[in-house]
Amino acid sequence: MGLQAQVRTRDGWAVQHAVVTVTDMTGAQILRAAADADGSVRSDAALAPGPYTVIVTAMGYAPAASTAIVTASGRAEAGTVVLSRQGGTELPPPGTWSIDAAHSSVGAVAQHLGISSVRGRFTDFGGCIDIGARLTDSRVEARIQTASIDTGNALRDKHLRSPDFLDAAQYPEIAYRSHALTPSGPDRWTVHGSLTMRGVVREVDLDLAYSGTGPDPWGGLRAAFHATAELRREDFAMNYNQVVQTGVAAIGTTLRVELEVQAVRES
Image 1: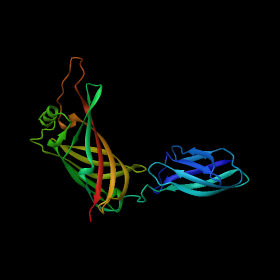
Image 2: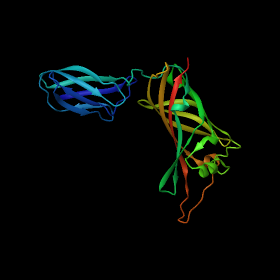
Image 3: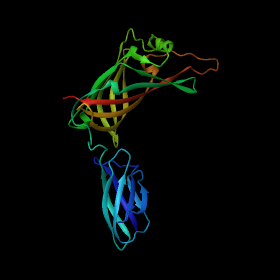
Image 4: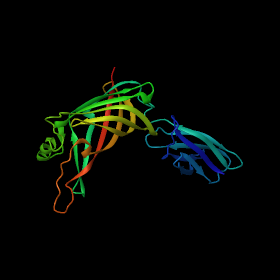
């Protein structure tokens, strides 16, 4: 007895945070159930025979509604419900997309004294995303002007630009170039690429989440992404640290990189 359903994206991934609501023909809610880690929805609540409306919702997706007929067994089988991403565009169409620096951000977070965090951002950057006909053939390139680091403190920013850290005079640019893309979940991918900083090249993976695609007020088409990565300072020859009297290093050995990207499709 009860309700059974599977909730999936168009590319077959489970929508783990989906919620299924069943109403009768008067609009009264009869039951409500959440999907599990496999996107499965199961409820043992008995349903009286007759027609019902099944509504499936999930954050970031357009809601889906259908009619289910409950038989004398008291069971409703909704089958597989496919949700479309909010906005109607499943994935960004192929082509070259330019990063809109005015509506994007490149930030980093470092631990300070082992008890708090210091945040910084780069204000001068750019790049492009080439989306292939097969999504896994897509590539991204980005460049950041090292001297544009801004933590909100002039003395700290001057130190970060010095040879102790970024050495902006000798290495004015940070570059990232991807070489592969693998899916890691619904709307999520791992970007594999090389990061060049302070003259050192290291392999760095980005955890990428796709937020959606839609038109902008200027007649363009935009896609939005969120990405994170973790870097070890010593991998890029940034070994400076100061130990305070407590024996704790003033600056953490790792940096968390946080990217919010809007890209505009080129004509």
